[in-house]
Length: 146
Image 1 (cartoon, one colour):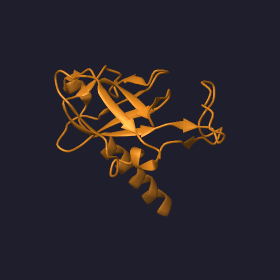
Image 2 (cartoon, helix red, strand yellow):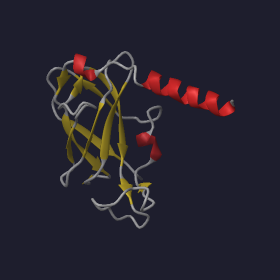
Image 3 (tube, one colour):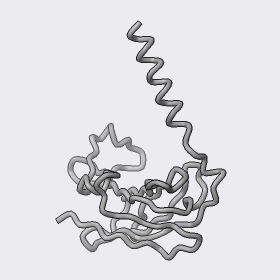
Image 4 (tube, helix red, strand yellow):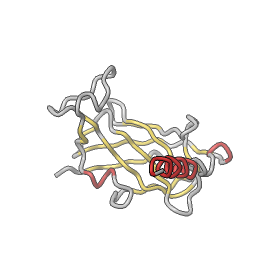
C-alpha cells in the first residue's frame, strides 16, 4: 500500500512539473554573452536563465566556449528565451583533480564537482540577473571565486 501511494505521489509531481507554460507558444529572443571567472574566460561553464515571477516560459541554457562566450537555447532547442527577468545560474563541473570532464565521460562516473561557488548555482542566492527584451546586447557576467 505504501508503495502504491509513493508511486502515485511521484506521478502527481511529475505531472505538475509538466504543466508549465510551453515555450513554443511564446516568442523567444536571441540571448548571448560572455562569462569570466576571476577575470579569466573559461570553457564549459554552464549558463542557465531561470525565470523569475512573473516571467513566463521555462528559461534557457547554454555553455561557454574556449573564449567564454555563450548563446542560449530554450528547452525546445530554439535560439533564445522569452522576454522577462531571469536569475542567472552558473556551474562548471570538473574532475576531482580540477581537469575538465572529457566529452566521452559522464560527470557522475568521474566524481565531478562544481568548481564555482555554490551561490552561483542557487536560484535563491545567485546575485546575477538579466532582463531579456526584444533586442538584447550581449550580456557580460563576471564571477568571483575569491
